[in-house]
Structure formats: structure tokens, C-alpha cells
Length: 152
Image (cartoon, rainbow, N blue to C red; front, side, top):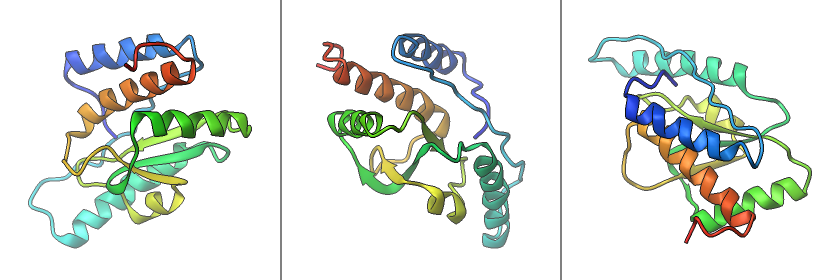
């Protein structure tokens, strides 16, 4: 959700995107965040998340394996991510869509669409920073799959 404003984050994401080019196609899809002013009632918060959720669902490839990042999901190590990505590729899955929600979180309809709900940590991270962290972990997983030494 949203655009990356900080140059250092854009540069880092671009660097990992460039590195990932040797393994396959890597694309960042930015989806417009719903504008709102705080404080929000619980109902208003749900409306914002639902509007953002509809935009997310409209952009997902129906044939992709969908991984949603959510702090309440299951935690994977880098090795487990690589194993999952490798087994999906061997099984014929040629696209994974990773979803990072907006600042309020993800609507239930997005969580329901997920093939897997993944948590990086019990900590909360800014969603812009998560995009860089996710790009790095995808790159790390690809180096593990390829038997390269970056991940060590």
C-alpha cells in the first residue's frame, strides 16, 4: 500500500530488484492508500481497510500463490522461505504475490485470500520499511535456492 517517500528505501528496493533480475521477474506494485484523518472510529477504520482491501484483491494474479504479511501470521526463517519458494516452483507455481497492507492493517477479505499468512516478527514495522525487508528476504531466498553464499 502506498508510495515509498524516503529515497534510501526506494534505492534499497531498487537494488534488490536489480539483483533479483537474474532469478526471475520482480515487480513492486504500489496501490493507492485510502486517505483518512485520525482519530477514526472502529467502523471508519474497517471502511478504510475494506477499501484498500478491494484495491489489493483487484491486483492479485488469480493463479499466484498469495503470501500476506501480518504480525499475527506464522514466522518463517529465511531457509524456510527458500524451501517454500523452491517447492512451489518445482510444483509448477510460477508467481508469488506478497502483500503488505497499509498503516491500519489488512481487511479480512485479503487475509482470507492468502495461501499463507507470514509474520516477520512480533514487532511492528513501518509498511514502507517492510517492502525493503521483504525484497531482501526474497533475494536471500533465491541465493539459498541457487546455493550461493550471500545468505551466510
